[in-house]
Length: 293
Ligand code: SAM
Image (tube, rainbow, N blue to C red; front, side):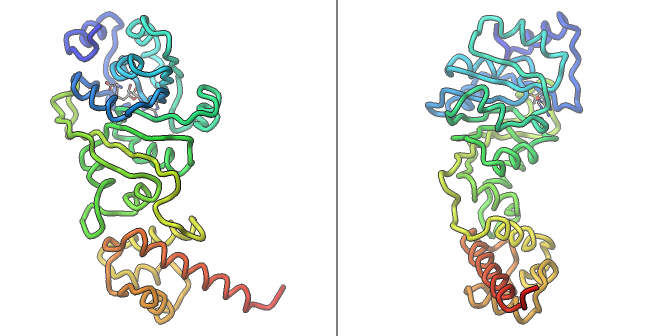
């Protein structure tokens, strides 16, 4: 069954009385070339977790090359459709649920044992950021994440310091992974076509984070603070978020060779790490100085 054919999609819709739900981001991919790009980007991976199979277009393409595909679909109406469209495969398991609410650590352990896997998805736009954040921050056993996202999101997640797209989420992505854009995808290749263009994004997970930090929580607090008000200087942003005087904060930055008048979006991951480690030292010093209670 050619699930990328608009004719076939319409026939299945008719057979099951299925109407697209905009609120669930139901825009189905109609390009075999893009499916191939997604599967190719997974390299020699053999086990994949998919989010949002829809009619099973990407699911089938994955199952043709992988040992095992587990796919999470929130829309109950699609379960019968998927039984029909994926009938010929015996290496696919569909789970009915919300990818953001399931315990993904437990699910991966149960379905794949101790092996590392990858995630593939044509993500509904409304859950793109929470899904990527959840997958990265929860330190799941993943090799890579290959996802279709809104083009602007892909540009943001692959941005370099100094560009307008570089933000806290870019830093988080680079900290845990090596991000790259696989290919851009015009909206005309979906049914129904969404209002925006898309891109396939690949996040290759790092064995260890991109920079060494003493305290990851402090690192992300510093990153969040630095981007809290994009038009303000780094010094002002930091002072608004940490209990230090302007002089102390300016001295922390200068000691690390960072000009306090810079903006957060110009800092590299290494510079964020230097600031976070200095803040930690100050915290430890303050603890040592305070009398025991
Ligand atoms: N994979 C298909 C394709 O490429 O044509 C469909 C992709 S469509 C953009 C997104 C799919 O994700 C829909 O089937 C939708 O029902 C499902 N979905 C939406 N929110 C979800 C969630 N929170 N958890 C799991 N699936 C979800």
